[in-house]
Picture (tube, rainbow, N blue to C red):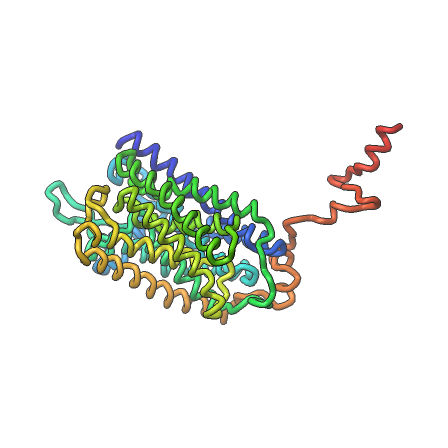
Length: 445
């Protein structure tokens, strides 16, 4: 065990967990005021449900003994993390429990990402049911495909086979472009089709109610994402440092790319566009951060920023109501980052692979495409079935009156902003039972 590596992975795990509250703020600011609490609660609910399932059987279902030729792992091998708590249980140079904690955060945020697509109209209880079913049937198997590498002995012989995308296909996905973003984006599209459009969309304007909250969320996501990407090196080493720098510069380039599209298309760059560009860049560099140089990272980020900015408007042309652009940012950004590895990968980067532009031919691009579209198809079909099952059994969508009046009151009996505390005769401000007018009268006396 290396104490430095262990400390870095544990810190990175905490950073990744912070991303989910950051996402909650990002999504919460983008919805209308009457829906913000429900948006926050959908992320919190994901943390609660997935956290428990991960310890019970999720880790084993992802990293346990492979039982189906790279497609499925044994969910019972490490049930309740049995056998992983001793000091001798290591994953590389870190305790296995540190790896368990780190990977748990990926599972949590992947589910939370989906929630933005169905903002304003999904019931909270059925959302938790969908979360439990989806993470079990979709995320855990896909994470096994992508993140579970073959275990080998000292002579290089495979003694513990892993997932088919990571090993048999040898597609590169350093931190989750397929397992997290394409997976969540495809599920979001399926969920949107099952739940249908919001009442009044697209004729009624549904602008973000709190842009500073959106920017705060984007900032927390960028901060936590260094743990997401650089932490995936699972060691405090050169790979972590390179992926850290690539995460920084790709995100910066994507932000500029998105703002440029807005400037040309709409005449003005927007705050919402800047925040969205940050997320698009983070999504795209996630799979590629170990495979490209910093110059390649700039290219990946800039291309993704432009593509995602253009993609978010497709929902109006195609008629699907993706409330907070999960499909346009995470599915499109994840596909872009995964496929661009096949073009911009350089053997001077930690992954040691050349893409098309560096003399590597089309081989890696083909591998990336197979991995990306296999995950997309699997996630979309299974998510469609799970969402339909929830819809016909317990009902997924709030009733029309609750949707109009506000999902926060209907689902949680709360409102984010208690405007009744502002007012009174003469515009006096009342808070916690104290009247500013009365205080002024006392001062005069």
